[in-house]
Image (tube, rainbow, N blue to C red):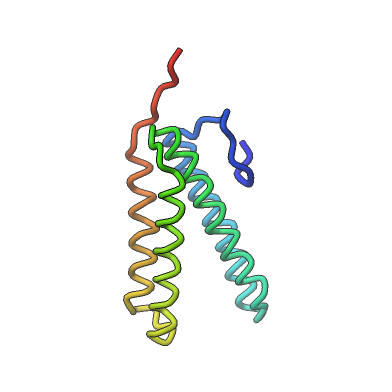
Length: 125
């Protein structure tokens, strides 16, 4: 399954979504961690965008396979929440205990939990 390009033929089950979510977060999280340790700001920003692109892409595929029909609405709402969280973080002086971080992480992991719990729609035969 290609996680970089949305596929209309592959089904993302609960288990596959769970493991893809963990794999994407682990691998890219390590890259972000090591890039930050070497003061390489470009790679930190690039990998952060890649992380969120992959998570949104896999989440959209999981939503599609769960029977959700308004994928574009999900993408727009997700990007608006991310943008508002980043603005809040900047206003709060990049405080990790501020409302921006809590908003971002709350939305991020609540989406994950909902998509892990959501049943997979069976294709009509």
